[in-house]
Image (cartoon, rainbow, N blue to C red; front, side, top):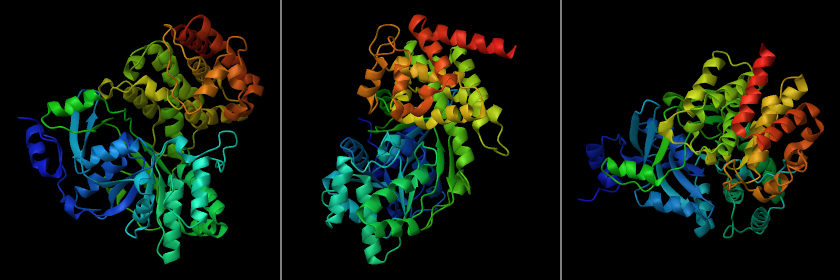
Length: 505
């Protein structure tokens, strides 16, 4: 007999034949309270999972999630989820090989906005929706890379602004336009606003979301901007769970347990969410299921962004150049582990705020353990993607703080040098590298001049600002890039670590 497909009707069968945990609550009782933009693997392994935990305690049943997509590719997720009543499997894998397999039921609908933008606005404007949440990645916030400000010249943003000024919603294309249209409707009706909750890996993600939503709203109507500033809240958050892209092998693993799932999710067994308690229309009781609800998220997000996220960049370019495709293979090499720990201890940690009760040494070593989790099957190319968004937000703040205080930037410079070498587009085995980045042509053009001008990549002030003028940074950068050209990634790391050992002797 063919394996049953995951659905409401087959939940009991799925639980019986596979042993997977399934929702214990009646999903027909769940009503919408959240609309989420960016329903991908991470959201489904993280925020939706926490909400499912609450629902399994028969709580927060009025906080169901409606996914909303604005990109053409989002139709694939819409179709996959719709075909199985918006259920999906989350498999969490620990380093010892244990797999926890459970079906998540907190997403109850999915709206693909391009098909009917007016209907999408109506969904957002519904008074039942009290939180709009976002995992749209760093590149989704429409940031002008040269100025760091909201890019008002973006053609889709400009068109959305004109639609709203003309009083129309049918042609809206961006989540800025859709959300702002819903706020306009709520304001006109005298209805309560909602909270906009960013869950992206950006320092001060709530503050950034507020800045850019206000910039767009004010460009539509200055009075609207004032109303949004006074009535909409934008909590900051720190989120953490390694969630690689779903593969056909992951789908096959689910099928092997006895049922089919069009788009399961695989994640590590570690998860963390630190959330600022700043909601204008209520929120689920997240603190009851492991979320750290706090007054100030910044110390936690700095710890995560500068230790975990920046270390991902520290391993991925060197690892890719050396011929590694899987993250756990990179971490199997002691030189990579030593390099990452040295970066975290010597350069990242001195820039962190005080974190009472947090053992940073244990946290750093836990990161190394997590990176080395072979069961997760995280890929090096995933970590290398969209570097022009990641490096400026995660690593360069460490560089600038250490330059300001006289701290070391040698290892940070080495990471940037490895990015410059990676952006040349060919690894040490002569294989082409697919540079996945919205600025890929610009980056690769800059990197193409590395050998004739060792600082060519750094001369892009739109990305690196004045770092080209700081000899404390350019000197170690040039040394490492030269070593990468002449000796390769592994030899370069050996020399960097030998120099560190000599300095500490």
